Length: 289
Ligand SMILES: NC(=O)c1ccc[n+]([C@@H]2O[C@H](COP(=O)([O-])OP(=O)(O)OC[C@H]3O[C@@H](n4cnc5c(N)ncnc54)[C@H](OP(=O)(O)O)[C@@H]3O)[C@@H](O)[C@H]2O)c1
Image 1 (cartoon, helix red, strand yellow):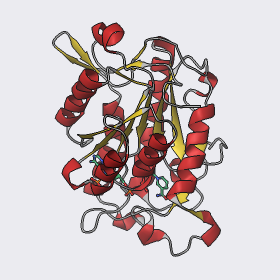
Image 2 (cartoon, helix red, strand yellow; image 1 turned 90 degrees about the vertical axis):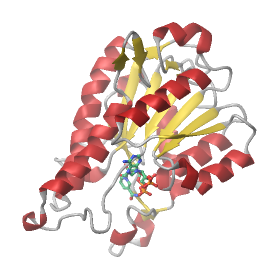
Image 3 (cartoon, protein in one colour; image 1 turned 30 degrees about the vertical axis):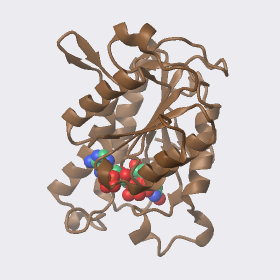
Image 4 (cartoon, protein in one colour; image 1 turned 120 degrees about the vertical axis):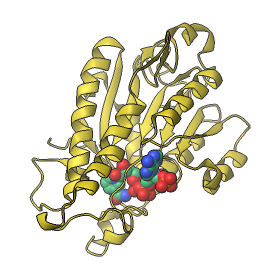
């Protein structure tokens, strides 16, 4: 179970930082896409489960993230750091990595929660092929697939290695798990095998791409760096993302953020190294590709 220092440590910046700059007891989790919805709820629940664990919440506009500031005030100083990060802007990804390296040294857990389905006058889920447009396909791909992968991509800048989850430092996990975890938020509709309805071309395809990219990265990181990467489907959750499309969702199939994140954290807590590269639904069932 991730309780503060329960997971092996991930070095965030240069390997040279690892011994001296690793975070103290309590562990560090990063939630990317934390301003609202499921990401915000991850931050809330992670802060609640340990009085030592630290959380780095990233979002596009920290100044406007009132809920995150409230959480920061509710908890002891230093437990929650809020940093700017827009997944479409690599400079913000690098700046966040450098800041985390300096402040925390390393990460135990990275959750990529960012995602877009609809934005008024910009992108709408397509109901027919005739509504498919190139800008929507590309925007969904950029935010939903490319963005999370850039966050975990190794970045070389001169001799400095900027990255989020790359090196296993200690293996001093209280659970004896001995590996670190990246959890990328996907969606059941990304499954090609499960696609009986069609529609939502941009969102579906971008999440399918996220699955493939995550699976590919999981092979490499699992082999070299003793890190596991998983994909998660949260169920249909009552957030801004699902709100315009909830009309036909039966009441008992529309989850609260609290319920969904409890379930997802339970999966995260119980993940085994052999689960590297797998795609889990909120109830722990594997979803076919
Ligand atoms: N809700 C569901 O029913 C459901 C179902 C299946 C999968 N999911 C997945 O679960 C994840 C979370 O969804 P949600 O329901 O919590 O959505 P949400 O409430 O709409 O929140 C989306 C989050 O993504 C952030 N974001 C959007 N574009 C970004 C960018 N360019 N850079 C950084 N952050 C960006 C938003 O930040 P801003 O506040 O700055 O816009 C917001 O924090 C998504 O990946 C979604 O696809 C959700």
